[in-house]
Image 1 (spheres, protein in one colour):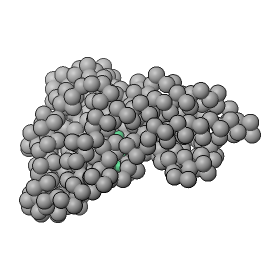
Image 2 (image 1 turned 180 degrees about the horizontal axis):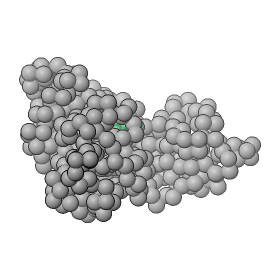
Image 3 (image 1 turned 60 degrees about the horizontal axis):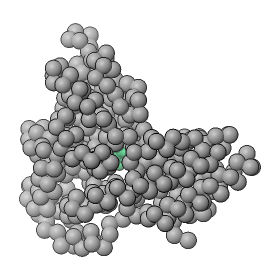
Length: 348
Ligand code: TLP
């Protein structure tokens, strides 16, 4: 039976048409700045986000870490929500590569506020590492793909400007936020200095992210990209997939959101599941298991029925919808989950 892979939206494979775009890509040496497809992609993303320049990078992790490195100095502090990807899931790079300390805040569904930030910003004093950067995540992965509210972001930005602090947005799934909220990407981007956007998640490209910001910052990021081994040569074959994704795969994210809703409703109907359907705004569904059920056990049972999800804790599971999962497959996944959970529930 075909697998229904809901572990992540990173698992998508390039479609035939995207592969055609890859095959037809014009290329050059991007370390010399001579790859026309890479240049087109960088410009297209910068324009969409209303920024001066863009930089094509290997991954969301590299986009975030270059943004941090290029906007901070060793020993400074970055204020970030405690479950943010940039702090939790990037192999300790904040310390290892940028040499910064993270000042963690507890967010409400991934959102941190101006007031919270104001309380932890360091005053000028010989004892303190300067607060150099605030990082927000939109959508917020660990908060069920929650959209970062734009008015809260505007407040943070106003405060940051007053205090001379830069703001970075991990916009790995920014276009999910845009499609779900009906707001264009540049409305979010105008409240931050830099944004990193992934092409290889819901947008369906095989590789890559783009970091955007002002020209000077992007030049610094390009220097660190080379230092980190991220200078690619005929990367146009990858950029062509990204350009294809920007043209064809943004509006359809609405289907993924509808599928995530449907999945969440189906899961929430099980008494074994702890999940608030109202929290599902985009394509990510985390759910808890009640009555002592074990997430690794449930995952194993689901796999036996060709449904793949991720255990993200002893009693938490994550499912993510994307362009390689159809509505019919979601309906089947719901049936499988309900029968597996009912059986596990009886056994437990
Ligand atoms: N997230 C991956 C895993 O690392 C958890 C996933 O499957 O969701 N920012 C956010 C908000 C992300 O969710 C991710 C990837 C990244 C950055 C990093 O992107 P990559 O994997 O391209 O380095």
